[in-house]
Image (tube, rainbow, N blue to C red; front, side):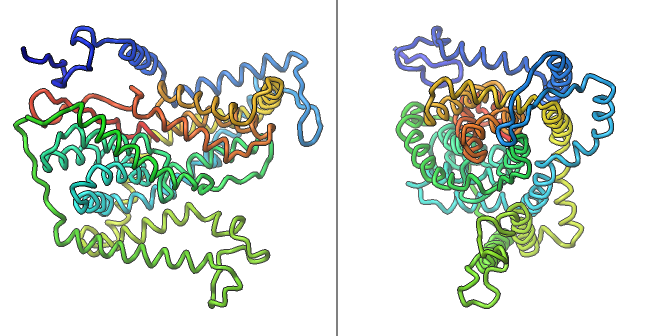
Length: 489
């Protein structure tokens, strides 16, 4: 008797009939997908929330709602925006709310550098070089690792690496879906981990800084605040490799499709480009190392980016220039690659590459406009501080310790991520509430941010909001699924 197969051409789950495969998990994911699809666009969501803040400020200002500011000891009451003075403030500050929104400039500057790397062809060639150079026995680990590293350039891993991984496995005589799964696990599950800083780091840090200002104006959140997630890159690579080889590959079995693929190595021009980019990156890294050396190291000019007075590195121009470094690294490596590979023949090509990167941010700018208004109104009305003080008091009275509290917050972030894919959109909503609240409990904004990132990336791989069906020609009965570009960030 022939073993039944599922409608997707894959072996059925052990112990389940094909007709009975719509189990509890299937129904739960379908429910999540329906709820997620019913949500308005994030830009619309922020617009509605901004209107809600205005209405709530008008209602609460009519009652004797008051809290004591934890730092100054002064009474804090709601400010009414549903009034003529409130209307004047809304209209006269609409532009500056947008242009002064902290994450906006950091993302634009970082994306200029990433745009050069992408348009020159450096990112694509570097990823291909990485996976093609891997020994066969390390192929899965390299794909997972490349997926984790790809978030340095935003969603490039979804667009480039996931389909490439399927082709690589196919060329190696292995099941293409296993390669796709390995890359997707690295790209999606490892979205917050990296050995380097990516575009998501300054974006979330800017949102955290704006939220921290509710309690402590002037508080600075450095984009490198969560850099210890460096370690997660190796952990996720090991786990992703083990799951692929021990769970996914046996589950899929041998590949018997008719399609076959062959991978071409880098062209001579691409190899020249990668070599030139590697040399330029190394020189840039040495320059940064020189700028961060102790002032008393005896090396001429050493430590020129340290604090001139104290010699500190933590609070110095070096640490406040992380976004500039991302841009400069993209400029140096991307231009070096383009010049050597022949993809850049004039300065106009470089400018065009940066322009294309800006074109991809159209919807992001729309979202930021409404998010900036929401955050500003939340600040003006004092609702953020009132919610933070009352929430902190409630949490203190609950008797929850630090670890249960953070685990609960991580779980909340993971659940919300099932319904709303954008990491920045979720954090723009959650940060003004939770960062001030946790600050009043003694937890730094950086700690709250990393807890959010842990929960947010954990459920990426199972969130229906992160994928869309896409049939690729990899053989009969083998539909593949690719993430929606832009969904994660």
